[in-house]
Amino acid sequence: GEDVEQSLFLSVREGDSSVINCTYTDSSSTYLYWYKQEPGAGLQLLTYIFSNMDMKQDQRLTVLLNKKDKHLSLRIADTQTGDSAIYFCAETYSESYQKVTFGIGTKLQVIP
Amino acid sequence: ETGVTQSPTHLIKTRGQQVTLRCSSQSGHNTVSWYQQALGQGPQFIFQYYREEENGRGNFPPRFSGLQFPNYSSELNVNALELDDSALYLCASTKTGDEEKLFFGSGTQLSVL
Image (cartoon, rainbow over all chains, first blue to last red):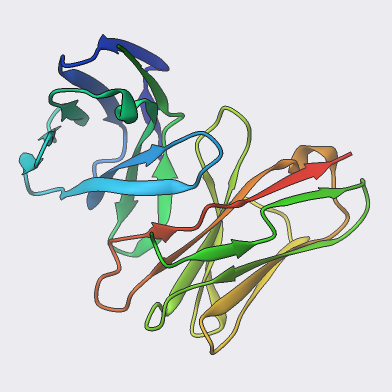
């Protein structure tokens, strides 16, 4: 079945890099996503990667995908206090892009 | 700014009542989906609509229903509210031809007492 797992909490110092990890179980995933949710807000799509890619870089964000191990990571370079939020890993399938399966979310705390 | 707006932002209901939540998407966003996010959890897929027809549903009972209108607005209706229905309800839409990108609204926080 579909399952996405991620650690609950990560604390980093401002200016350091953050790495948030995620594992998923369904090898038929087509797209894998990272969403950001700030307190009291909806979900902001940060970045996503197609399953036939192994890396994607977008400014301070780097996504790495290890399809063999079903492992996805998000690296945030030069982490800022504004990056403090909950980060959700998610997956979907080509048959139904809107049926997205989310992890429980990793709370990133950035210490000034 | 995602171009997806939801109303109301907060709502308080009592058990057994019915509730309607609303969502407005951007022009050209023909697919809309609804998610339930309980406190401390990731969002759970409720259902999706395309061209005013439901074409995908998650593990939610029939008392969760929806409507999609030609003007890119939609509704989520929940009958016979239960305490466990208390959650943040999120609407997401996608543009035809760009279906892998979901744009979420800010959600409606529903509290059932």
